[in-house]
Image (cartoon, rainbow, N blue to C red; front, top):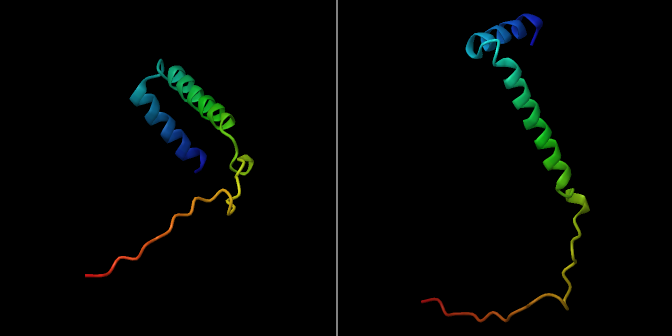
Length: 70
């Protein structure tokens, strides 16, 4: 996207929302991005999650009985 396209988009936004609403709109978008970043920091990374190995001692193995096909 070039500068001409950005100016057209900005003009459409000003017409739709009005010049007085632009600061509120920008503030809301900024807060949304900030909350999204904070939420990502709070969750543990996928590689940092402890995975317990499944061994014969910890596995719950139940016998399977075969049923005749009718």
